[in-house]
Amino acid sequence: MSEVIDGDMIPDIAIYGEFGVLDLLRVLLILVVAIIIAKGISVNLRRVLKDRMSKDHVEIINKVIYWGILTIAFLLVLPVFGVNPSGLLVAGGVAGIVLGIASQSVVSNLMAGLFLVIERPMKIGQTVNIAGTAGVVEDIRILSTTIRTFEGLYVRIPNEKVFTTDITNYVEHVARRLEYRVGIRYSDDADKAIAIIHRLCEEHPLTLKNPTPDIFVDNLGDNAVEIMVRIWSPSKEWYGVKKELLWKIKTALEGQGIEIAFPQRTVWFANELQKREMRDGADDPGMH
Amino acid sequence: MFGQYTIPVEIAAEGVSLAIERDDKGFRYRSTCNGVTVEKEILTRTGTVLINPVEPLHLPKELAKALLIELDKTLVVEPATTKTVFLTFPIEIGVFITANETVEVLDIFSLRPQKFTLYGDPRTGVICKYWRSTVSATVPAVNPRREGVVQLRINNSTSDWVTVTRAVFNAYTMKIYYNERLVSMRATMKILLRNLAETTFTDEPLERGMTKSLELYTVRKLQVPLTKFIMEAGL
Image (cartoon, rainbow over all chains, first blue to last red):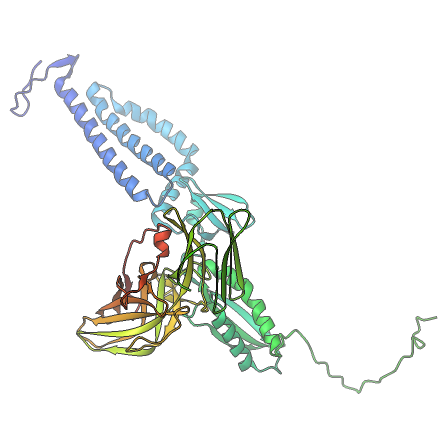
């Protein structure tokens, strides 16, 4: 039962049945190579995902990939032991179909989660709107993303939905524009109003100097001269500035005699109106 | 105002009042600047207070990591030359308490209005603290409680004339020195291309005998990854 392989003097001594030393070496070689590959991928994956995912999730992905590679290696060495993997493949195929149907959504969520980690449309702590749910990203997990809404609610969104829907990230860019439309009366001086709003923007520390505020008469409306106010602020402070500045504009304008216009209509009568004076309800037919 | 004081202490100057008084729990800190009052209780038996200018990054909120100084006059710099100009920069005043060789920030205030700006575009740009400065050939006369003077060495290493309208600095690496008359820094702007420059600070006083400010990022044990600022969105 001994052979000489490729001229090397390694006798293939049978260990058990037809399973010889060379078979053992082949098995060990495949397993060692598989372990080296799995370890290499694991180390690199940990390095790549370190800053993108939580440590727990990185470990789970690592383990899945590590044991997946070892399972493939194990299937590769089965023929050496005289086990035909085609039988396993048939059984595995049937089981795979059953599992595949059962875990379709899990796998799609998992894949979407991996793509989200690669694409990184948002980071933990950022303010986003995903499919109409606005809030702060609490966690990006393998299967789902969790959001803390502004009302304090915990919302779990499956990654497949996150990946396939529109995501609005409010703070990904460092600066964001806010917009007001201020309506003043036709009798007021629009240039003066613009100058007042410019001064307010200049004095406010959180409205950015550059890009410069853009303030102009945008529309001559039915009831008001509409002044458009476009201001940039740091994204993280956008909401605070938006809340604070509108009222300051209103009070500053009114302080200078410029009033915010309200809907009104002038009615002209075809005939001159007849005026009738009433004395203490004497002429009121309801007063008896 | 700048310097080291043993508590209890009381200082009042230029619209700022600051006092650390003994009370039953330890000491009570109280400061008022621009109508804003800060009160803190200090639980210690003894200590000293250090007041010095700090990096202008903290007011009204810590949003910026860089300081953008816009020049009131455009500088046109000759190719392959080095020129020195003097600019001003805003001052924030830090109050530190020290005891047992440890330092803690008590308060930061400023006598100047604050403003932010964006350097670059909203996607890749940087939020900076904004300051508009005069450009002088000699050290300008400024109030050291409100403004400092930065000596800027502009090195045009290109073979083109370059226009400079602003300078952006990594504010975490500022090296501020002070005495009762002047707050100062030394910085260099090396122009690499017509629209690209790097700025750095030099750890040297502008005059002899100046005291180095306690840097806030040192007190807070912050890691500063870069010491220079790359101006890649124009000069």
